[in-house]
Length: 286
Image (cartoon, rainbow, N blue to C red; front, side, top):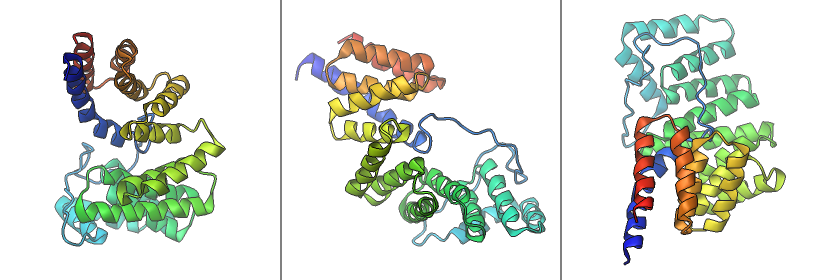
């Protein structure tokens, strides 16, 4: 193996070390925008961290998880639940609880209550919210917990699409749920291709197909998709990151350095900025 090949391999290891983080972080929203919600926060959870770890038992039951987290919060958490349950309108009660647990960093519980609200008043927004919360929770779940959350998110996305078949973002996330959660690549890609036929500039579709093209080493297709994405969203650092990866694999080193440079300039996280600098140095010093 030549020196250039060795360096490229080493650089790829650095890149792949970030792929899962970036892909999962952008899964629900490739723009990586976090909504600033101002709503009820269960007492003891004001710092926004999830203090109730998910237990991946032989059989994950979401109601048991909720009871466990409530128990860990103690009496104040129960008071919040009792207070919320006094709200007269059932749907309002479920939504208030869903928003509270979302703010507290408990997407499983938030999804559960959004699903309760959707079952009481079936709307596109409520089912979509439930799906997105379950989908978010999948990022840190494993084993039976992960499998249960996949099933719940797929169910909620299918409900969303039954109300509005034109919700292309929900369809894109459903596709990735099949690919990541069910290992059904053909079904997921088929859904993404359906979106491409309707809206060739749908950003989620382009992002997911672009990442899949990299993973399957279809670099020309990946290049086309991420070049489109940087045009559509020039301020999104992650699109430049993947564009740089594609250029590197296609031996377009100068273009790779340029793309990673844009990524480094736009990204705010210090650790990711540092990794970007290492990648650039590795390419330039080969």
